[in-house]
Length: 353
Picture (cartoon, one colour):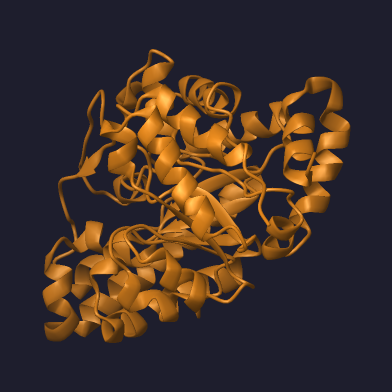
C-alpha cells in the first residue's frame, strides 16, 4: 500500500484521526512533486462537486447556499466516488457576486455572472474587497472546509477565481478591447481582482485548505504576449504570497501558453485540451501535471469508454510520476456516477513505473 492509499485510509476513519492529522501534515510539508513521486501510484482527483450535489438529492442553487448540503456532497466525492482528494466546488461566480455582480442561479447548473459593474477605471475605486467571512456566499465554502477538516484528514483543495477571470466578470467582454484601448482601466481592475483573490485564499487556508486551485479559464484566450503582460504577473504575485501549494488551472487550448505557465510558480499545472505528450516533454518534473480526460467523455460516454480513455492516458504518463490523473475541467452536474467510478478504479488499479 502506497502513501496516498495510507493517507486516504487514515483520513476516512474516525479512529485513525489523530494519526491521520500527523500523516497529512507530514505529507503536505513535502514539495508536492516529491509527494507524487512517493505516492505509490498516480493520484486521482476531480472537481466532482456538481454531480455529487445532484446525486445527494440536492440542487446546485440550494447546496451553494447551505454548508450542510455542500458538506454532504463533498463527503459523497470521497465515500462513494472514491476520489483521493476533496475538491471544493468550482463556483467561479462566487467572488464576482461578493464584489457586486448579479448572478443567475439554476437548480442543475453552476451560477453565471450576468452584470458587470466596471465600465471605467473610476468604477474600480467604488468597489470594496469583500470580507469572506460575511460577504456573499464565501462563508459557505469556508464553513464547508472547516467541517471537512473536522471529519477527515485527506487533502483538501479549494478554488479561487484568478485575477484575470474575475476582472472579466467585473468588466465584461470590454476587457479584451481595453487591453489595447484602455490599459489604465485593465490594470486597475486586475489589481483589485488580485486583492480579492489573495484575501479569499488566505481565509481558505486558515479554514483548512491544503492547496488552492487558481482558476484562470479566461486567460487561455489571451495571446502569449498579453498573457505575459496582464495575467501572468498577477498569478505569480498571488502564488508567491500564498504560502501553500497552488494549482494553476486554465481551460481549453493552452499549448501556446504552456511554457509561460511553467514560470508562474505553481506546484501543479492543470491542463485541458492540450497535446499531453508535448506537455510531458515541456513541463519540468519539478512541476506536477494534472489532467486531461475529456469532460465530454464523462458526460456522454460509457464506463467502458472512460476506462479505455483513462488507460490510454495512464500509458502515456506511465513513467511520469509527477502527474495527477484528472478530468480536463470540472465535471458537469449530469455526469453519471458509473463513469466516475470507472475512471477512479482504472487509475487505482494501475501502478506507475
